[in-house]
Length: 471
Image (tube, rainbow, N blue to C red; front, side):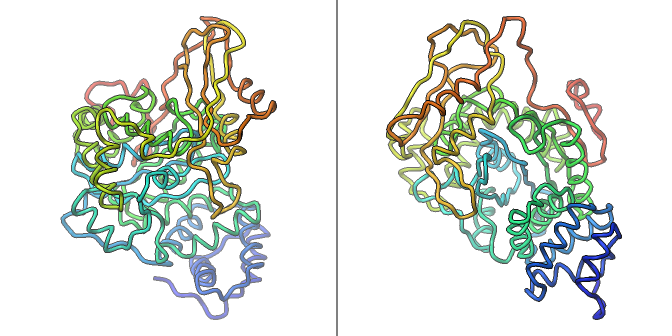
């Protein structure tokens, strides 16, 4: 590893980046070590983050930043025989995004090892850990030794970031939020890929979302981030690809932590919404192909679909629940074929249904509007560490493309306040778009797949038989 020159000056580094200059790998190492060891002032870190946000970084700088962040803490070391089995997925966040809950056990059922390190939600996006913490007893805090044992026994775990993993990122992440530099491409890349690199993965898939309810609103800007992430991941030795997926309407029919757990369990039982199954099988198929568990993407999708329907993925999920602190009785009950989910998951005190104001076809549902209302009802947080209400959420009672009549219930809101405000009801009604029968066009969730080689595949390419276009 490179070592800093003792003459490196933090103010000089900040000045050079502020003026559009390029930092050397030695300077980036010195900066990250200063962050980690707390021998650089917080105001200087903030100034450097703003300089990076304003002037950006060339590829060499971004890769150096990502590597040094990864090496600022512990890097997981796994048994040699697991070398090509270790895979994970990261999503840039969306509304109703419960993909990780069925995906991790489905991959484990196909022979992979999935050490999924996830986060809590912030702003309008839901966090995987928040969903799992709605299950009584689920413990997201596991030591490295415990993670290794769960992977040995079960094949997958979903845990929070340990204190020893990428400590520099915890400092930078908090200050990025405070300095309005969250949306910096090199800083996003460094934060995401450094944590995944520290997991010691063989293959990593990024689910980069775009649309009204995503961080990036259009395909081109999402593609720019995806290519940066793929480049950085591959530079660290992980076989890294990215899927670009649409995030306008919520994924599935449920939004809200406890409700999304219910829907994920339905998916694991071979049921659930088609778009949820589409994303789980596609992302899983990509990872099985990328890790050589499948000879083609198409075959990989079939493998994932099979373990979702034959109970193998559900069995892995139940075992993961028990391994992470859920009682055998609760885990078995939740994973039974006809459970009363709210025997164990808290149901909100009130449920309110809203009715459609017009006849026609459900053309669109604005996920961002729904997430914003739920955030105000207590489902989300505005600052890290803030408590949330796991029971708040919505159930969509209609699907896109469905015919609907005036007065028909289209959404059920779960809330603990006695009455929804007129503004909240108006906002939710405004999220439903009703049009003519010919105004709706079916669109797949997946728009593009960027392979580890950098080759981009469109839905037309992906429909080729036997995955013949894959590299």
